[in-house]
Amino acid sequence: MGTHSIVLIRERKPKGREISVLGGPARSQYFYEYYVCIYLHFDGYVESGVGEWLANFLHKFGKDFSTQKQSDSIISTYADTGLLGAKLINSFYSSSKLIMNPRLIPIESLENIFQNDFEYAYIITTSYDENDGINDKSIMLSVCDHKDFILTARPEKFVEKYTYYMEQMEKHKKSFAEINYDDEVEKEGYLSEDQLLIEFLNTH
Image 1 (cartoon, rainbow, N blue to C red):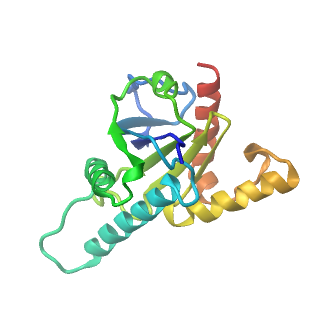
Image 2 (image 1 turned 180 degrees about the vertical axis):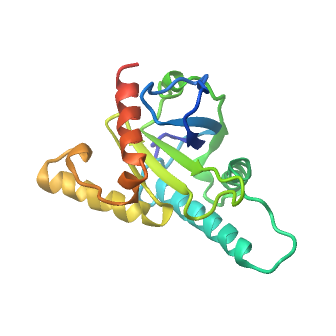
């Protein structure tokens, strides 16, 4: 029950000359802007906890705005990462699952953020598009466990994928790094970025 976690929201863009003030892997192919950092005191685990709650929330958010763009409505809300952050904060604080006990914390350097007292870190990554905003195809959810591993998936696949890989690790005694992803996470560069982030966190 008392499993602490943090939730970060970030937006990724192809790397240019920008330098993130929060730090990060020097070999990263992307520039990340961080929007929100939320600390949750309870239920930080993935299954039936914060992870599953986030996956359901993000899937609904992406689906709602994808459907809205396809409608004939003249008035529509442009979904960007800031709006996602605002809606997530509101949903956390108005959730009937009060044991989550959310608390906004300052966004510091990545090195300092990951020194906080938590068991799981959840990272929501959006891909920005000036014309389309964000939708169900531009949101990824990651879980990082004590800097030991990081797993990324689309929200609708997140819990199932996590369960599968945990079973594979237990059954075959393999690490996450030894299991073949062979999906959009690898093909769209998320896997290589995950590996760089874990390497960075373990050396800082």
